Length: 167
Image 1 (cartoon, one colour):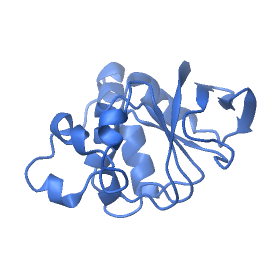
Image 2: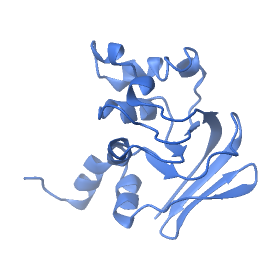
Image 3: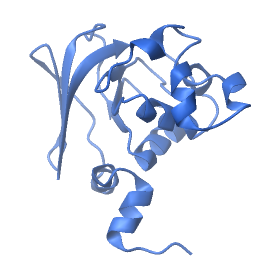
């Protein structure tokens, strides 16, 4: 099992809550992530969504995804073409929603990563390797079952791929 990503760092701060990721006012009309992606992080930076390029990697500080447990926060990030979030720590509910939907959450020291830095992320059975401008950052490994879920593209795909049934 191996997942490899590379992209441009999109730097955020600490305590980026789910209502910053997608404002609750936007969720009143729809929870369709294909529509909502145009409003990604608009309360942090109104021009952010328009500047996202497929393959960008979100980089944050502590407590990313705190706030409400809305699954759409993770799916909107994915819909925008962002496959991974690097943060010093995650709110537990967001972390699990990310894995369940195929968004890769990586816990690592992000202090040295700057906006626009070139990043590479490699996940495999041995752990996670993050490189930023040639420097390797230590990352907290994911449990093997979470790696399997991410490799499948999320929990629904994992269940389907394994031929499992839900009761």
